[in-house]
Length: 219
Ligand SMILES: C[S@@+](CC[C@H](N)C(=O)[O-])C[C@H]1O[C@@H](n2cnc3c(N)ncnc32)[C@H](O)[C@@H]1O
Image (cartoon, rainbow, N blue to C red; front, side):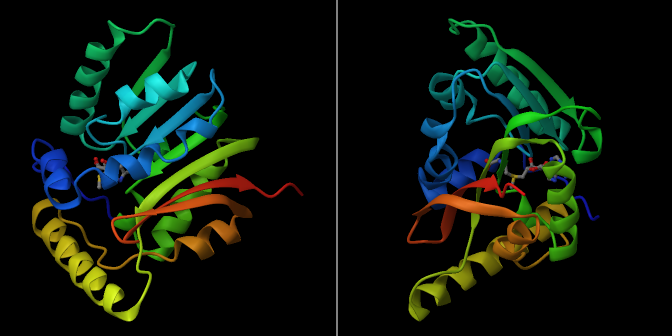
């Protein structure tokens, strides 16, 4: 798997995302927080700077969070963010930050919720398939998977600008983050192959961003 490096871009990532997408990136991540039961255990992988943590803590009130990040600069921003929020929390959270990747998920850990936000787009179909199947092994049978990412959708003129914007984003991250992948993986197919079904879906930024809550098909 070609792991991109978000080290150099870490100080600017959230500002750039806000500049281009306004609140759409944050709104897509929060879209289904209201469906997650209080006291859930969460696995957040590729969470970046942890910008979403305050909303997540307020809305979900989780019992446990494992936060895995491959960029140490992003991870230290997320840790600082958490230290700041912690002072205002009225309930205890068991928080575990891990510098690493899916390979570093504690072996026997099982979570109520997986969160992958703007992560799978970094990978080819085969890499995304490999990554999701590792993650899936850590989701409880009754668990939910919150997924948000870019997509190409809508009328042909809409799809034209979406493709152009996507291409320029891939080029930008190729030069700043050594990103090798340059096209979106087929998420729908990947989740289907893993026997997940979309419970609800919402779109943002003129349908360029999709947020989906997936559940496992019970066999
Ligand atoms: C595009 S950023 C998205 C950050 C955040 N989820 C957001 O939406 O604002 C992707 C993040 O995933 C991290 N990452 C990429 N591959 C990873 C992996 N296999 N395991 C853990 N983190 C990963 C990168 O370091 C980066 O911080």
